Image (cartoon, rainbow, N blue to C red; front, side, top):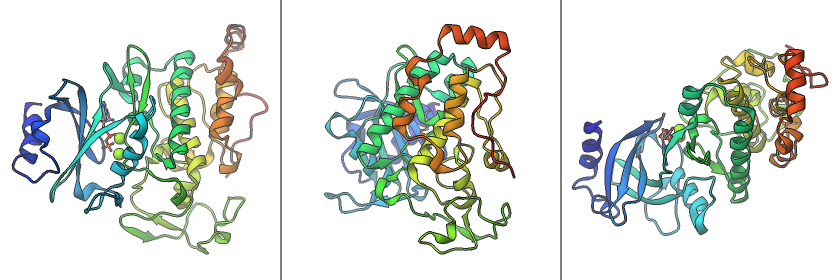
Length: 349
Ligand code: ADP
Ligand code: MG
Ligand code: MG
């Protein structure tokens, strides 16, 4: 860990950073590393504030954009966080405090770091499946934070347990990692990044979607698949993304919320393989209340247009009342694991 401290400081020492990073921050040990960067803990020297410092290498940046006052392009992640951090931001979204360019190498992004925080992946790994009341408390905050994010014209596109940090004392959460994010108006379109290959689609001979892809503005018959999935995380991605990278941001987000809620109440994600995602039929490995199951199934509807909006999620009975005691006991007696009646049938292939 000590090596890491020196690595980061070494990297910026003597380089032409936007402002002298080292005179303002002290770097600590590595907090975590995902696919696209390393995140270190740190401290702001002026007031001792605990921060997280994300190191983004130039060659790992997925999307670039321009900021009004900057000469050089910056990673989209920085522009999105800037947009979300303005006017105090939102309690459910990590706030960016500062950023620096390390010329020729990459960027350093300084964020707030909540006290006693852990990402939700580690939290669930340590505790196993969460109680429904805790899952509800977390889920509610995530949905509210996403409403704020969308209201600022931003979409996250990589909602999953690793990209949510939780204060383990208060159970307050914050969404992190906008590295796959985009501006809302740009997202209902097909996006290609990285290497693309032309593939004949092998799963369906005819499109399973209500709106044929060939009727979209792209007029494609053969589906283009970009490899590897550089946007979002495959096991959290909906069937339309797996099939074609053709997606709309809100239904894609809602699908990933279904995966997240399942993950919280069952202790693990519902789907590993593409065929399971296409089937869109989660099988509950633990006792989960009827109300919670119905919300998860709704979010995991095969057809994007059948999924709820964020507002519809918030007004779902389970979100309002949670799982009342009586129902919980009744469920217990009936064995609980039974499939709920009246839910949409799973996609049959
Ligand atoms: P990547 O884009 O590589 O996935 P992330 O931004 O998701 O990087 O950060 C990787 C990990 O670092 C997270 O999963 C989390 O554990 C930790 N982390 C990131 N930002 C913070 C933060 N602001 N506070 C605390 N931990 C953080
Ligand atoms: Mg991440
Ligand atoms: Mg990322």
